[in-house]
Image (cartoon, rainbow, N blue to C red; front, side, top):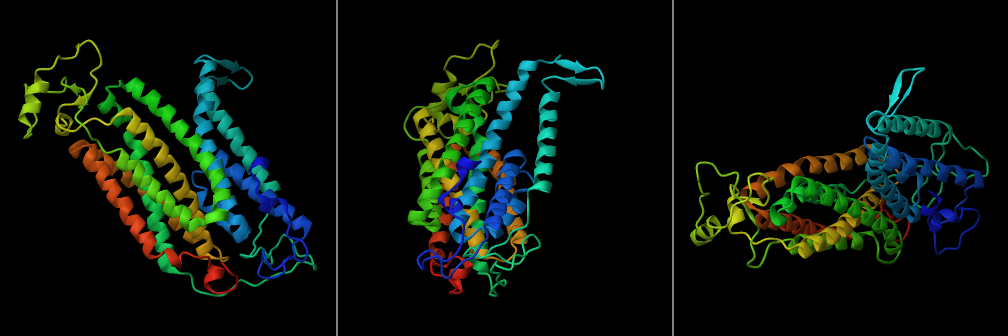
Length: 424
């Protein structure tokens, strides 16, 4: 985890600071500084090992334990650790397949270790290790937006400057806006993740095995790309700011789905095996139907491939070329990663130094709702109307999110900046 440290982590906030980097002088003991970042890195590990159910708590802690200068980098590191866990988890499970179904048996306790039990045992071991690290190393730390620590139960040195929790109202319009934008980003990702297998089977006549294999490789590459973006965002945010990166991420996502729209005059291969009683889907494109009806049938001994003829749009919707698809994968991956990190970072800054657990729970809930509704949306729209309608609607949703962000752009500022305590 040390490689994920940013420049802000490398310099303790000790003694007098020049007026350029802080609004006022900051005093933080070396002991407090080291403990604070040890605790944060333990939560990086927690996100890597088991992020499900812990996301809101971890991000709430990190938001309260970092200054504005440290916030974006810490949120990016958190997302990178989470993405790395999602990638390496399936890799470890694949490696355990080498043990085989028989495996070995520990006769003393009658424990069989094979390709099925080994992943579970590793998960349990890592969970216990994570619990021990949290109990022994994690400490409560809270600092304000400038990095000055609040009074807490862990450190009560007389030399430590302590501040009171600042008063002021949270900008609820900005809070709702970030929830909507985060919902949109997660919705788009859920739609894309869910549709990869079906889309490639329809467009490129891949078998189920090919679609799962190639789709898994693409999603793994998607995750690696996201980690690179998460780490690169730390540098970009210092130069152009979180709001601009969030806007740019949404624009890149829109471009990715626009490229994914089917054009041209080349049509996908049609799968006729699912037709019953020689019925033909009701469509106005008669000439296309007759031409395709006369095309050679598939060998019944093999798995039927192609776009099912009972999906009427298959008969008149041009195919999405592989180059289009791969380009959109790259663009959507970049845009989603940027939106994901910037949403959390901006959200925590807008809420300010007050406890953020409830608000972070709302943001996590909006993301969870998007992960539920996204697959439902794409399964209905794509199956009934095809990729042109499905991806056009996605482009419309993202465009509305861009407009919303543009309307409230100037209000998406940190709590302390909004109340005039520090300069932006």
